[in-house]
Length: 381
Image (cartoon, rainbow, N blue to C red; front, side, top):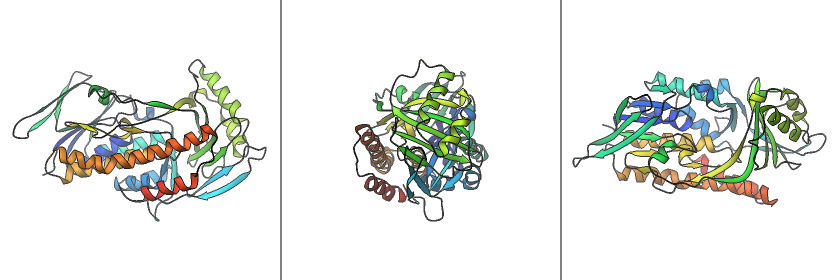
């Protein structure tokens, strides 16, 4: 018998849905709650490195992901000159193995839909527009115990384990009384989702000019997301039309495919601005029978595009331990932390270092740092 029979997953993003799929496929009764109203609200575009694709294959969704996304094996570096000149073409490490692409872009809501459809297929009960209002843990002398949960709709449930996969500002983390400092990295990012010009067949990064980075990633046959990274500043006073105008103005320093992309930036609702943030929760990541994973435990700027992969790795390791072991004890939680904490922390620190080098205008050893992360993530979690 596995260590758990019933699990509540809080959060329907990558970490939460992947955990739910793995557990339900192994015979565990799983409820998943997501506070957002539907799958379309779960983000814009995402870049997935090979190690993320490896985990998606283990979830049984690779065929759907492959059909919905846009794969590529090379990243381009371009100059902020009038031609958008190509400075370098860098083969990306195939961290998921030689039979998978090095990287793939896709619409985040589409990835969420694929994973949540898979969750329903294997028996997960999914509820949108729902969160919890109270968690109450207990353990008896014979080792039996659980978590009593009160939901926002007034219903209740009892579970062996609760998984908090509810993002950077995790409500689960706050409910556990964990004070984790999430700090700004010092960069803000403009993102826009729109049609893909034929000239965009991979991620290209423009360094220099008025912004730190101007880049884009194809997310499907007909779509991409484009982004511009600037010093973090308060943009909250801008109207949607002003946000669109600001991103278009910043993009005018960049050419090549950006000249085509800029013409498609016409819908203010498809532009957003956020700050890069970071934190790592020190071990352990559990408090009794409640455990934090994904962005709730670790988050970093997308400078090496490993956030989604780390969330998926958390899910596969946690589900493996909960279903392979027969006892839910601190040894299990220690094993989870041992496999995830240092690996995630290393990725977060590397992502922050890349950002800091750009902020400080320092020519750091970017190839060496990227190689070290590729070696690490090429090994399954």
